[in-house]
Length: 204
Image 1 (spheres, rainbow, N blue to C red):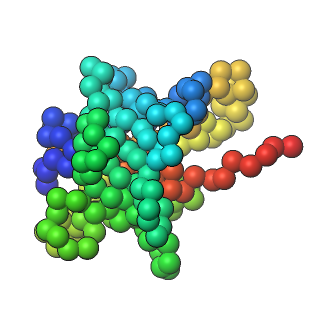
Image 2 (image 1 turned 180 degrees about the vertical axis):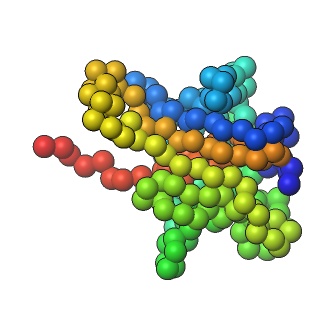
């Protein structure tokens, strides 16, 4: 089960639940802080402003850049790339939606794979509700790798009025088993959020 995609340092030693909370007041939006259920900071997501590739950096608690996330400029379909460290050229994985199917899914291709074009992971579930599972296809077998869901701050009337006074964005919860690469899952979560983000049109 244990296999490092981004870095073995960030593979879960046991079952882990991470909470990816968007920082509402971050410049440009979509800046996340990612903590475990003990409140310990694991990662944050920093945005690169004025970037055509919509670049982001996943940074650990020590301030080290773990990996990058960027949009592929030339592609037939929206594609995000996970890159190693600060390098924009060393691509680890490509994340592509498969939209023309009865059940939309997101395929993940590891660049250092076996050379074929079969996905190494896939995400499946209710993308509109932001609730999906990550399935490993490594070794030709389907194995559940993680579960990810988004919970709204407006789950109750009291929460709605509290949010109006103390605004806090919705959060993703990433449930990962032992051996899962948490850095990879966090980058994948952000990419799926971007791929299925609702358009932000003008408000009345």
